[in-house]
Length: 250
Figure (tube, rainbow, N blue to C red):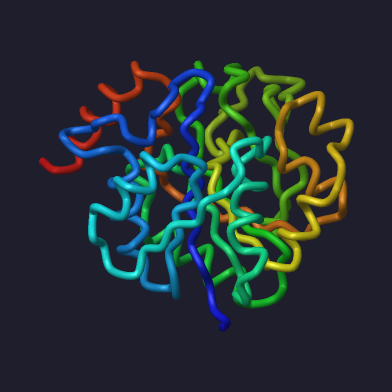
């Protein structure tokens, strides 16, 4: 088997929102929204929902969406990356795209673009970033900032306000700050290598697992995109997602 597999990590025990994969958003469980969006991508050869819970598995199987598989994984994984690594460790795909299970409006075109980038063989990983246009987000530590060079190669990710503008007078922040979008493409072999590495110091300080890859010398491409999605991290985010869905359907 070869090609590219999309994997959706979907665990039950979210600290801030237990069972959020099955939370209803405009009448459909969140995991269904994610699966349906991923299935719209053209470059994936298979789709897997990697879960640790029978309730999620049963709901996904009950959707009867063609060519969507379930991978039952261990509950104790520290991250979604570790969960998808277990899901694909015995499969012979060339590349893996990790689509977060709490992104009900992930753009299928972005998934295809990530697939195109990782298929070149030039990069170990690929991810995405979108311009920060809300001034409050620039200083918000929950909004991860991405720095990359002229080729789009990732330099650093931080919760801090980077880059720092030393002389801000007369300087526009337009196009300076980029918010990281937590979707990743990996060469399969690199993913399996990544999860075997211990947590590095920077990752431990920032609580950002992508810094482990950079610490290893990863060639990571950052795709510029316009993101219309929303991450559902708390129950309050459900209403925000529903409002965004209404706006997109108008």
